[in-house]
Image 1 (cartoon, rainbow, N blue to C red):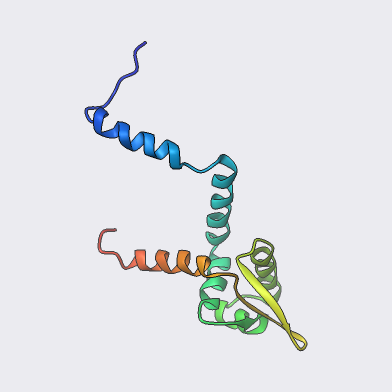
Image 2 (cartoon, rainbow, N blue to C red):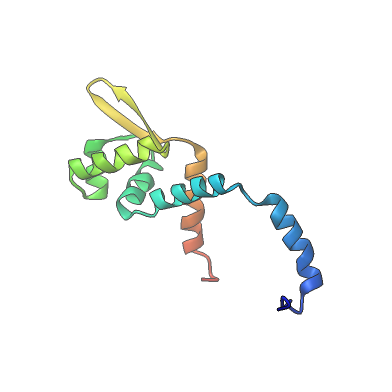
Length: 119
């Protein structure tokens, strides 16, 4: 059976060739998917959104996110283990912050998309 082509076959050939050259390796696709999976959880996203404003301890994150300390701590561990947030000890408290500006950019772009008139 012959493969059917679309009406824009010639124009699409260049796009297909470029896409094949630039497509990520399967292992890298999985890593990017993992980042979005981590950020797609509402509890974790609230934590990340709170940390976009600056460093916070678990006590204050529970206040902002309206969660229990154990639930917020659990989500923070997941985020920290996956390099979305980082922590540092400040006396007897642990302060959390965004791990790098790439995470900040992803979240800020998602928020900006909410304000886009086209959706």
